[in-house]
Image (cartoon, rainbow, N blue to C red; front, side, top):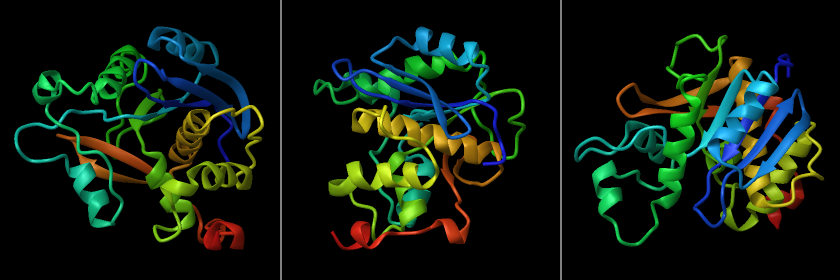
Length: 223
């Protein structure tokens, strides 16, 4: 990575699992927090002078009947995600499923005064936060046909290792996903990302590795 400015990634969970934060400086993990409040994660990001924050949660609720363009665009690439509802539908749900999306909303609310939400083509130099998606990140590095939810623990660690990130401190898949979001922030600062979506529904940001970096080991492709 040409950028050595600190970056962060946040994996969003429900109330029981909580949120996980990883801060990278280059490829070195300099902070790893688990189950912390958004305000404490923000405090750490400001302390380390983070330049970009990748967040694994929708940055916008759906508006009206039409789905978010970001999710539609990824689906056209056969990369599928949870469909984000309107906030009203999420509030009305009795299942509790959307709790993680409300936790994501609280993270964005805490961060956006200091890290404005990514706008495709906008400046990122003054600090930015953005939505990303670990499965889409995995597809970018390994290929859609290889990326597997069943093998995500192994595959996502291998991506980080290939990028030079020491994965030993990452104790869970939630830590790994937070590190992948931070890795994507590095790619954003280097200008090596694809942004799916539009201004109305927000953008999902995915790395665009160089062709020679899109390596798939025989273990990952044939397990």
